[in-house]
Length: 241
Length: 241
Image 1 (cartoon, rainbow over the protein chains, first blue to last red):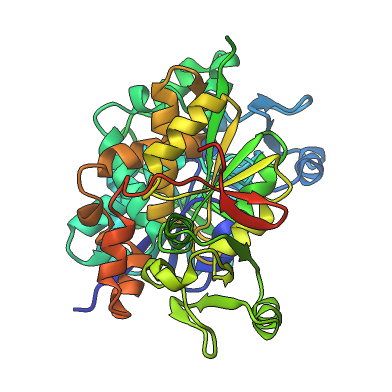
Image 2 (image 1 turned 30 degrees about the vertical axis):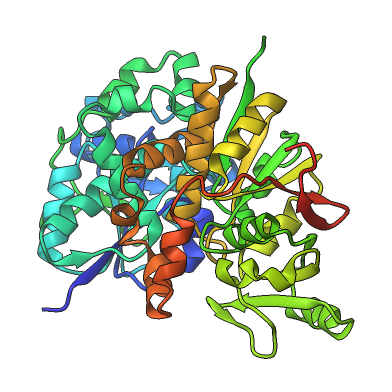
């Protein structure tokens, strides 16, 4: 059987180079948008509508939706939540349609939406997601959200972890240097994400905001069995997962 | 004493984010432009004029200059050399002014030319260069040439090696995730560049062109004591190195 590709794209700005060659795009924003989305779907939220701009977020709010909006790591004034995963674990949100706009993650989701299949990845659903990807046997691109267009470590490590697991199945190969680099960074870090990421710029940024509880949660793999998937502009639970 | 920064920029496309914050930019294109430039300067070539386009290269050729031009890893038809370092070791070139245009490296040099100081880095002159940088004590950006705008492993590892040595001096710190990632990739690879880079896309590309001798030379650190520096649009030997 011919091997499929798994590659890692460091930032949405690099997406054009990869575009069109992968049936499945996994969008990753470990700290914290895609971790929050996984938590929301796990909590029973019916759907998460990702929007890029604060203006769109406002429009949904006026229609009565509960809306999460984050910029610079903080809740945008006037909105219900930011992107802390804990905000999305409230029982009151079960069965609801909610809206989310974040600095990096929702932008990446919207950039990838032309792909055949867009799913949401994080360390939280790593094992469930990679098992499903291997069973599907399609070409997979891990699209890291980065930080304002720049490379970040935590998304790259998560992308490297996905690539490593797909490569270990024997059914995948990686050709791009970004994928090889991501895999090595994952292998260097997997025994101690915290230690590895202590000098990460994004973690330092969040630390100032006193978000250590969020960070610890987002960096602890395999806590959730969900695969959030984009369908008709809304992120829902994959029905056959 | 306040610490200076050493950071690693993965590609010329990312340079805008870093621009203006570093007195010294080290341009890196391990396979093979900056390795070739180091070899040329070591051989006694008087200066290397980096030009971005084939048209400019032709103009210099018409004026009687010896001109190297490489695209897709191969010599452009009608020119004297490509970017094999061995081409620049000929005794006949000593004292000459030559011209060079390559796919990635000369583009990076020209993008960085607004910086106070632009020097040429490779694994070949790693120790000489890092000792000089530490003695200067300025903010340093390692600008990787990448491959057609994309991240590549060998330049990143060289940037990580420079960062690692500057950090080890105790006078530098790194804040960007790209720099932390580059340093880890260097630390993972330093005992066996060949093994590490065997899956590198660029090495595979060059292997097809039967350039293993070049690759082996370019990946063997600390063979040369030169510091090529950009002065008035020409790369020359640093006089006080």
